[in-house]
Length: 176
Length: 176
DNA sequence: CGCATTATCTAGTGGTCGCTACAGAAATGA
DNA sequence: TCATTTCTGTAGCGACCACTAGATAATGCG
Image (cartoon, rainbow over all chains, first blue to last red; front, side):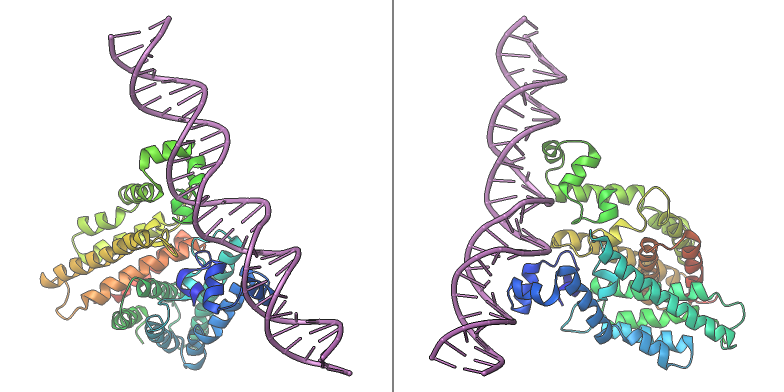
């Protein structure tokens, strides 16, 4: 939660020991160092809060339906009361002076866009989407919309505002 | 440049004195403190690098043409060689523990989206865009695309990739 | 109970942060 | 040329950073 809200670098070990209500030595005994704790937090975040994206992509019958559901759920997730707004993976390592941490989350973001693209390509191959569809651009656009939604959630946008943003963004898909 | 690349907080005064090649006391005599120097840098950035957005919006005859040009120019600006990728206003105050700095850039971002919206509303009022156009959603979408482009530029996307992203995003506009 | 082991707390490590007192250098005016 | 003023470089301020050694408390086991 602290990493999520304030990012990797702006969250001090003193902050962590306070919110976890343990002493610093216990933290280091349990997790090794701050970096390792952060990696575990990222993984936990991925399974608990960030999994809606791949679930939507896997469960819906088409790429377009998957990304539509993903964006709609993102509007809800990113503005959920009682937890930090936006996405940890997108923001927590911004302006981080530990290159490994920054790189780790960067790879996650790029992997997500690559997953969009391959899902779209599969639909093109299956004839669900027209032949000339620019899968890479469509994937990058979905990624940009999600990243922008996360940013705007942090900047105070409401769930409704993000939902109408998500909905209008679906107009980029080829008309079938 | 240093603030642009590493953000407000991750750029230390020692970094600044090194790249500016002056002593710390000279820096404080000239700018007051780190915050004031940052504000001046933001203003300088706005007039030198960030002005393409409002220029595009002001010079093009329609909202759609303005935002199209803005997005295309953003693809070039955000990947220009020899300077940091992405937008200072979008990234430099991320995860910043000085609330005033974070708030200052947040207001700039929200003001940009508000400017998009009022430009779109003007076109709706003038009959250039259809009556039922959701100006707020269209504006937020353009903001999300620009923010996502900036993020992806930082994550290594090329100019061409951002250009095709920008182009495909234009499909959200009502067909005339 | 007595002892060994584990966990936790206190206190402090060296380092860096933003920022500044102070002394010496450079520039200015007469 | 000298006195005064402005600037700059050194050196260091207290605060906080991630991290840890050593003392103390809690626990498991015979």
